[in-house]
Length: 367
Image (cartoon, rainbow, N blue to C red; front, side, top):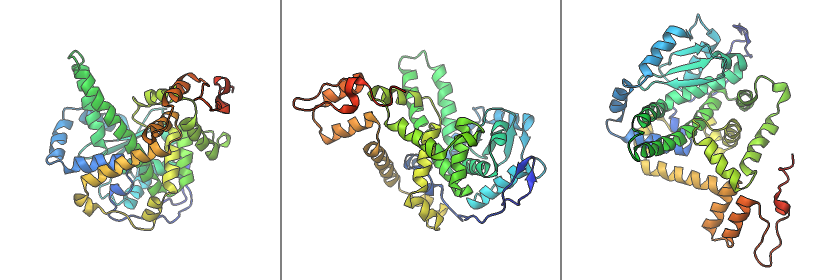
């Protein structure tokens, strides 16, 4: 808990009571697509043994030594305010073993959790200098959420397969097959970031601080120039704007990324904070860790499929609307595809052309 003192140039806020979640399972806050993958991985016999052995072939051990030798380890004597946050986050999410945490000199605001057997958390000086006390608390909770979920598995597999793809690039179709798996893993990893954002909210229990942190990551330390509502409107415009060409470009832009875009993360977190799932957790109703062994892979995959179907059904994206129309058997799909890609105004016989595509220009195009 914050004690109202000043730590290393950071003015901490007065103490406030926050809920603790004894025995909470990471399934409580995981995005359905992330949860289904993790439940399946945990059910694989010998999985942990194989990947702990595999981690010895990867840069993980080297990274541990690098951070130990060339970064500052958080403790009661170094970055004490971060150490308080870390211990507090582990207390709230009931993570028994507090992972080591390092501050690394890097002007780019970033944080990560690595390690299969014993996770470590790394935050950059750029992030520490950018965020205030409550914003940083959400970030620390985000990383502790990664540790509790075991998300380092994704990162380890991605490192291995990305390295392997380079080595087998000369084999016909070999690189293509591996990169297809890497693309799927990146999609899982992006969903794991949404899960960790939720964990950060459970730790900080301050939705505005979580939003401010995401805005600062996107636009820097200029809160007086930014507005949460306007930032969330950007996410809505990003999803709904443009035509089918923009939909394709969105997919191409996000494919190589390990994290969702910042406005998208903010919108997803806002949606979850307003959901019944979040309220139930805050009321003390959540799955427990000792029940994880009984979690059904089939049920988890069903929830994941339902989540993706819901995203498509409720999406305002032009491509997702077209997919919905195809599923619903809408007529004149060929014409709609042509208009979507070319901005054509031709209509089916007897139909008036839509007013917002007159001349091939939408209201957003002239700005």
